[in-house]
Length: 237
Image (cartoon, rainbow, N blue to C red; front, side, top):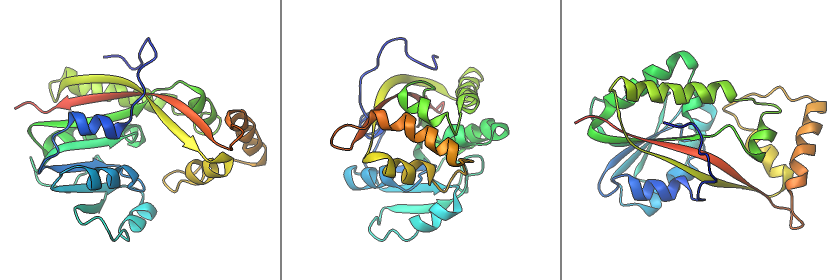
């Protein structure tokens, strides 16, 4: 297992990979750390799934998600990956998008054990994590350096494979594109995220803006290609 690719990986998206790699027709999916349910919506509206259970540990965002009126095949639930309120062997696949490294370090092994518990035999866990590299990461680490937690998340996945909790079905490295309509959108989506509190004073805010602005084009758009890694894990039959 490699935490990063040696060569520039192809550009794609988690949605495209999930559509190709996971069972979707008539299946029951669990998304852990669904955030504002952007990818949840894409999956629910585009794939022939029976149900998506979308869990979020941020109470503020979860309450917002409960107000979403037009996703009848999505059930929103509150909770973290280390304590999943579902029966054993009750879902066909589990999805974690850039969220495993947000699990407390002491609970990473418990989270992976919980994922294995709720998966049906031969079920798949799709765990997508950002690689600690790239222009966007260089901006983020000015106020939220995730080097330690991202390494810990990778190490936990590797332990889960080494101990036989999961089989490594595939490991995929790809580039994911992030677009922002100027610094104002970056402030709203990243600095203003309710799942995290950043200690950004006026001086640091100016440094972050100074690092971001060179990436803004004449039309006001900033685009980043972020290195990503997907561990596709299979629960033993």
